[in-house]
Image 1 (tube, helix red, strand yellow):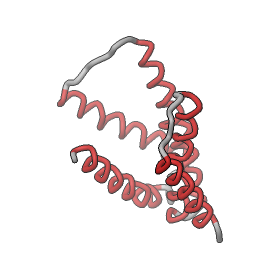
Image 2 (tube, rainbow, N blue to C red):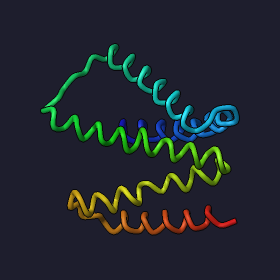
Image 3 (cartoon, rainbow, N blue to C red):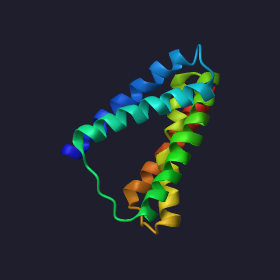
Image 4 (cartoon, one colour):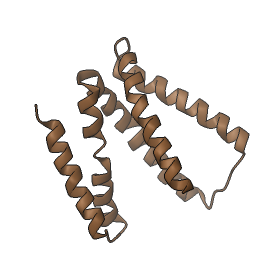
Amino acid sequence: MKAELYALLTAVVWGLAPVVEKYGLRGVDPLTATVVRSCAAIAFILAVYALVGHARISGTRYLWYMVLGGILGGGVGMYLYYLALSAGEASRVVPLSSTYPLFATLFSILALREKPSTTTLIGCVLIVVGAVLVGRE
């Protein structure tokens, strides 16, 4: 139940953030917005880290995966997302950019050799259907 609550709270926060950010993109270019958002996120995470004080590293090799993930998701992905959000409507950009579980599923099958369940595959088909519907004029 704890995981589900956190996931729902995540969805609420991630649903609110683009609306707030769309207002900000009225007066800030996407690259500057990416830098400001990233700095704000880092400051917040460092504050939480200082308060909670968890530090567990099983080897520096694993940190490089996190660095790469940060560059891909936090850097490249966020910049592309802000380019899309500044050029389009949040009500269309957000659902289309939220098709990432489809790609995460595909990449996890290819790279991690995960075996998706039937319900996961059905969910991926529904993601594609939703993206097609949202992407239509």
